[in-house]
Image (cartoon, rainbow, N blue to C red; front, side, top):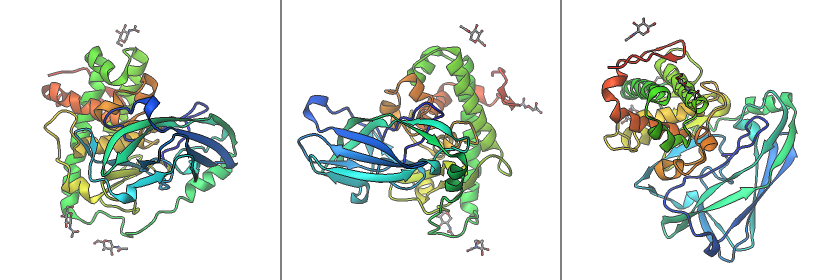
Length: 359
Ligand SMILES: *[C@@H]1O[C@H](CO)[C@@H](O)[C@H](O)[C@H]1NC(C)=O
Ligand SMILES: *[C@@H]1O[C@H](CO)[C@@H](O)[C@H](O)[C@H]1NC(C)=O
Ligand SMILES: *[C@@H]1O[C@H](CO)[C@@H](O)[C@H](O)[C@H]1NC(C)=O
Ligand SMILES: *[C@@H]1O[C@H](CO)[C@@H](O)[C@H](O)[C@H]1NC(C)=O
């Protein structure tokens, strides 16, 4: 479930945004109504208020009950290999209900007042491909959270445990991950440096602003990611080289359980992704791991959401959403690599600050 609270602010929920927006006047629309069931337990009612039946991708949307943030394969602006298990059909005028607990995806241990709002884009499917996507908005729901009960929920996140072995006993994977994480360190450091000192045009292309405060926040998160990826024996997250908690499914490369600050790679992380992609904005192991690290609140708080995947959708977000969107960091880091390849080997991170040394 992609719904998570930002402290007394709101959250935005956007789906895999690829392809183009469906024209508003000709398409179905969704109404999303959020209500509180009990403390952090929330009910969403999604109603198809248009005239046509619709089929949509529900991964990371309502009805996707896993308390994880997944990153899936997209290529050339398309989700790859859609299967029926990722799709939901909603007849015109009908509703579906989903109940979920926001304490499984957000750190609500401080309690107090939190406002939830869900908006975004859902991919619509015809045949076996996405033909566009649909914007939706929910009501704003302000709730009071009992911190103690919220903490109990977070602790009770039950791993599916389809595979019980949590260790990385596979030496091939261990070696691949060592390389991937060291690439993640380089990418994140280079991108942090670029955010602080690099082209304002490039920064603005991804983060939609050039103000210093935003550049500093982006740099700080990227520095935190570099630090975390660089520490393989200690750190804020646990990173499994296999599907330790059983949330991998078709097309999923890796996932993060934000409540546990836990990241796991799926099999296709190894078989599908190159270590480092040659092309601009292509997915690879290093940027996939970078993407996942930004989700973990203990790396940098608050953890990011998945508000848009891929270049088209990520760069369609507002500035405040871009700063909270995992893939925006991955894409920015990916593009920075190519223009600053010579530079970032010289960069250094110490005590959270990137030195300005350049090659
Ligand atoms: C996990 O894998 C290790 C190494 O292969 C093995 O020694 C251990 O028994 C396994 N544990 C479980 C619970 O399967
Ligand atoms: C180790 O991981 C590699 C890469 O995913 C895989 O091809 C291989 O089958 C794995 N080995 C074992 C023993 O699971
Ligand atoms: C932005 O930060 C840079 C470097 O820290 C500084 O030189 C510049 O004056 C700042 N600009 C504004 C408008 O605060
Ligand atoms: C990076 O910083 C550390 C700690 O300040 C220092 O020991 C190391 O030599 C530096 N490395 C480079 C390449 O500057």
